[in-house]
Length: 398
Image 1 (cartoon, rainbow, N blue to C red):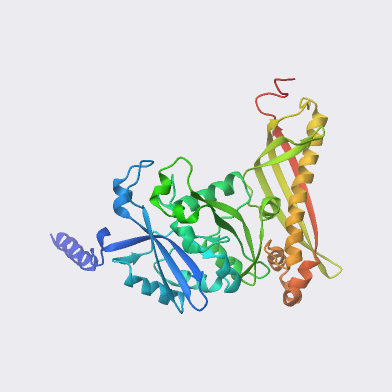
Image 2: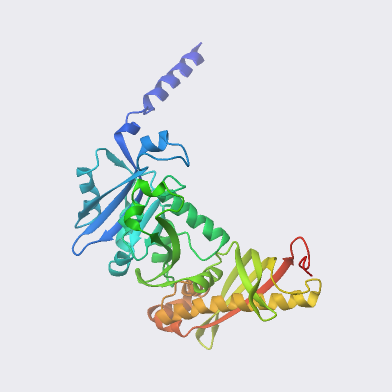
């Protein structure tokens, strides 16, 4: 009997410590922020919020005609980012709710003039933001303009950008998914600079911000992931794209899959190789007191397309194709290295490798690393293996 009283007393004490729903908020009391944009005017910061129109998202049908915008953009200015955010409450009828934010867009001008440390500090400091939010640079336009563009397929354009970036990173390899945590890690790491992807507007940005633009088969404006922004000391210094951008991904071990075109019988880009697996290892060596870097790229691929007369049944032909593939990948990697050394921006993280593998030596190099990096000897080795030729060896036309 006594044990039952103890059990009952235990339940009562437990209930006293349960918080219940004392701080619960209804959806109708909040404005859900899906993305934040950061711009810079002449004297103030301009912060924009892409707010989800919950009623339209809930009642509208996916792919159907929309009567109202699924997202609405509000902007305010202030002497600090935090001040601009708070001043937005003068325009938004409900309290801003940030836990659903999945994208931060920073304008190219802001990244060049102010750098990204001020932005990242606030987002990392505020308790309402998650540190796995993706960050991207608005290329050749304002961050506010990016947030205003209506998305024809994905109902929320911020979701469209993050999904597009994740997909292109997996299947193409020229772009980088960077989250707040990744940027902080790069900013505080010794011997490593920041690199992140950009997004630009293709088409008429003014009409693309209207719902009417979605009521036609060819959108007036679309958002396109474009290029990789290169930073030095936290500020954007230039863009790399195409093969240089993919060369960056090869070295950073960020290639999951991509397509590499090779020449055949005098025909340019006649054979397409689908890379299905890639792995990069970076080692540092000290030669005569000077650091050197060794980059080893191992990759496997399949023949996805062949528009030339080439006998794939011959092993020697496959071997020759593998050598050509190795040369192409090495060329792309070397082009990225050349840009990094030219700009004295170690966004490839070679200094970080030396710091980890030779910490005592790094203390000697750290103060003059940008100059040392610009003349650093880098040896790139590529080992390519073509695993399959598809459903047949040679083309049906042969």
